[in-house]
Every structure is written in C-alpha cells, then in structure tokens.
Image (cartoon, rainbow, N blue to C red; front, side, top):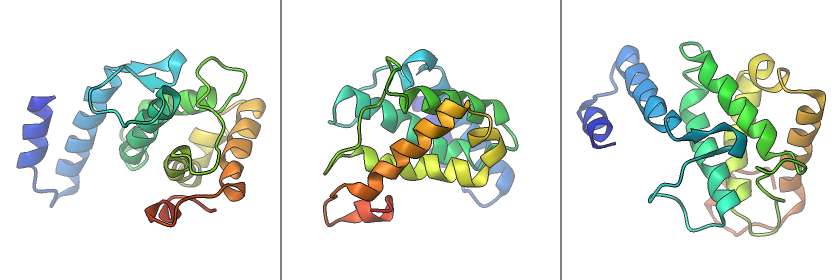
Length: 159
C-alpha cells in the first residue's frame, strides 16, 4: 500500500487522466483483498471500530465512492461491488451486513450505495435480481425510521 500512498501523494489531481489513474490504482489495490461471497474486503488494520458486519459494509461502500465515478473506465468493478451489495443487504445471505438500527453506523454508508443507484441505475440496480432490488430498497429505507446522532451523519442519510 505504501507505493500507492506515494503515488497518490505525488498526484496533483489537476487533470482527469491523472485522477482516473489514481482512482484505478486505489481500486486495484483494494480489489486484491476483495472477498465476494463475504461482501467484504479482507481484514485490514485500518478498519473502523464497529462490528465486523458493519466493517464489511464500510469497506465496500468506501470503494463505491471511487468506483461510481470511474464506472465508464472500469465497469467490471462496479458490477463486482453490485454483487457484494446484493449479498450484503440480503438477510438470508451469510454475508448480510445486518439490520440498520438507531445510532448505527450502517446508515452513514448508505449514501455510497444510493449514489451508485442514481448514477448507474441500469448497471448497478436494474442488473440485480428482483429479490436483490427489493432487499436493497428495504435496507436503504430503514434509514427513514431510525434515530441518528445530531452530527454529520445527517449528510449521509435521509433520516
């Protein structure tokens, strides 16, 4: 990861091609740790202090922030992450990220999933099974019914 960090540190982000290169390198590094059936990235020392399932969600959601704008150059990454989301929001799947409850960090990660749906509906949302679509909608709608702290979480949820 150090090589990537140096690469990114040297980037000026003043040209689209350079930004695409940095995002592609970032995604490439993280996709090496991707565990598709677990809807997660392999354990990392940089994970948040939340429960394992919330950490798994966080890893996928954070990658979506790079994969969504890069989808025209790397559509396969968005498709792979879509499959992870479909597994992660399925309560019958072993990789289920868990229910969204009051004061739960999961609601913060929902905005990345929503962005993928809005920006790439056909590739991200419509390509899911009907059950996957229903599970995704149900899981995201949970944010409308929970209490969240009076902080920056309001920027990431519709609650």
